[in-house]
Length: 169
Image (cartoon, rainbow, N blue to C red; front, side):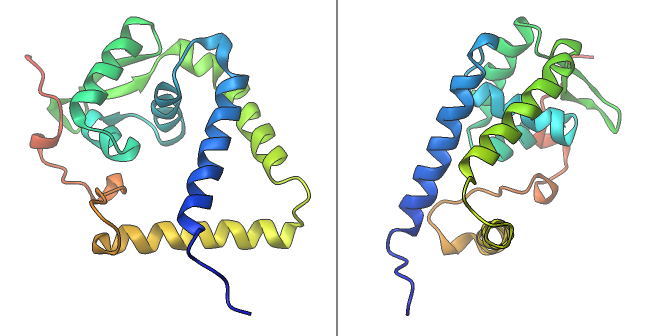
């Protein structure tokens, strides 16, 4: 039997949207938008990074990340610091406030993921994970395979000072 692939993109989109919606519903007490959660999750999980790397990771325009970081910095969720590798750059760092809620947020992510996978045997879960990783890797290596796909791997992003927010120092 041949798998019908014509709805795969829509199913992936719908699954992603359902996961984001469920996550947002369980984290409302912190008052962060879905995009703010994604930014915070990125710096908590992967460590401090430039706004350019965050824009790439979140698949949004750099100016949008700048405004997002401005709001999150004013609310005490992140701070900007000089990049130890390039003093001309600023990196976004999770604040103590963000670090304090990180374990609870990780627990919510685990609960939502487990709920989403309810009824799937371990073998199916592993196969799904492997398939999704393969899809992402394939599309990231071959940007012509989908329309207007930005570089989604921050490690592949240019590392020059042109991609970071300059300091006035």
